[in-house]
Image (cartoon, rainbow, N blue to C red; front, top):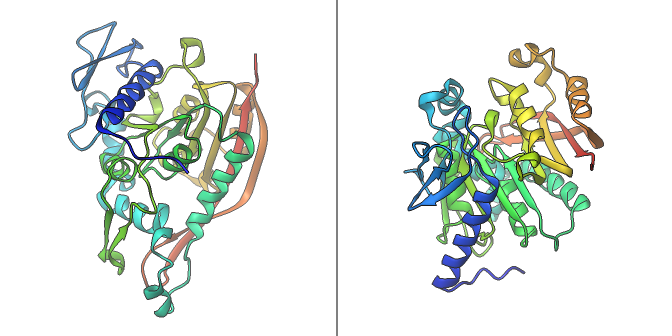
Length: 335
């Protein structure tokens, strides 16, 4: 069991060490700039161009690496249904962390059972795959691209306590919820009245706070993290249910691959219907295209499955949506 009890001084020291480690991996997100960053008060400043400043978000305990004034894709993403406050609540309470209360006796007495827990099964499968590839007691640097409300970020940080886990997302609402889940010590109340569940509470007794993760707001098409040739790189990069939900999936896919260390792994989950999507059709994309791109970047395929279902609970009447996923794990060749 991880000891989550810290004195104030220990918390401050741990936070300072996290920021230092994070800054060693991050770079300036501005177009045509890749300078290193320094902490100046509550903000970050580029050492190549001091006018490039990254501010701490007004919405939570995370930095905003995605200023919308220079990126139309960022503007689109902030207005997307996937970035909405409602989806952030539903993703937390019904899908990513719903297993904390969807099994309670009150719901079972009502005879509600259809769709219960299937989303959690998916996340457990993802985690099981990681545990087969990585040792819990080793120290890694891991990145969860499109972390949403933080389910995979949380799982990785909890089960790999000696590792540093970074989670990034474009949505304020998703990151505000992730901030509550990962770092805030209060119980987490989720209002699911619009889905018929009322207000539900996730107890901190069942979900301890995390002390080895950093979340930040960024555009996944241009991840502001150092590639291996820049002195950075990650032992594991996750891209879970992200690629097919963007305007430029090709850019996000390549950005994810670019930050994987030699010998490191890339774990992808993507909708099985992605190749029918209009954005993917611009690239002639299908699963074969995806695998060919991995191989062209010196990745070796170690796992692939198209038999994974993602079932999303819709309301307390038993309604749900489900769709098949491809799950892929590929490892970059060592030099």
